[in-house]
Image (cartoon, rainbow, N blue to C red; front, side, top):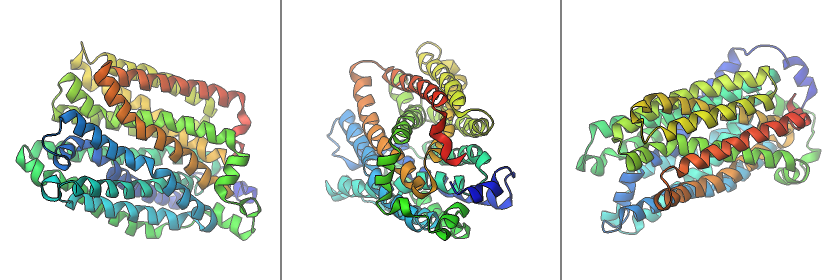
Length: 437
């Protein structure tokens, strides 16, 4: 890191400009995350409308999740390209471009004709829009973490990453609230005709608003200082190659943490409402209301763990937080069969447990130096999310139907146990996060 910048920023508290940056970055990230995940909240309706009516429900659901997964599979390409130019020419430009690339296809999904009108062209167009969304979000999340981490004092990086991750979670909350309202207002043919379109149109419109607001963001002082010193010697090759050659351990650990993050967010938060309906007979409204409570727990927890990551050793925080996640997630899933009345207690607690992922970003941005930070975080995050995010919905859908309805529980619990092991590794190898300290 640039030590001349560090020495002046090391200990001062967050200032008005820092909070402005966090607010604008979180707002844009929230809206972009909303645009990306609203798809899963309406996957049942989308599967019904965009595939042949005589197709078995389970098959259309799997194909819908396949299109959802395609957005994850394309993310590494978008992330690597945006991160490359972000490391070369600045974070702000790519940070603003990503939200435009998300808003357009989200709006288009809300306006797409269905299978009844276009036949097989309808799911193909849906897939193309989903791929465009994946390209955009591949640059957004790593770019947002990098952007805010380089704007705040080094001893406030955990807080900044925690707040931003909470902001991203706010996008999920917004999606859940919109989904709950739409399911309460529209039923039957009204939902199939145009009710499902409203969330996508709203998301596209707010995306353009967020892009407009980001005009007031400034380039990060750390990146400007690096440019002024002409310190690009280490990035004459492609930044991503520098990452893989010199920072492979950090990359692998970041990928494992992303795998855990993806499981917590996708399985416990995004997929759970449909899971509750299909496997345990909860109504759509009840499932989404409980989901809203869980997301609130997640938002609070991300910020709490971000604050703790600044005050205590990151490895210890990850160990403790991961074990809390194991306990709360187990309590949620294993209580569904015989203690369904506890849903509004166990599910919010599980959401709070998942919030340890708010500290994972703190590790990622500290693990890589300024010259390749965007590329390092982007490659690690997007490659892992593409693999885990791409196959998780399909695998769990199959395993749940063929083996056990508790398959999601065993999957997520195992991964958060892995998180505790990674925390131990970080305690043993303290030098891994030295780049930003």
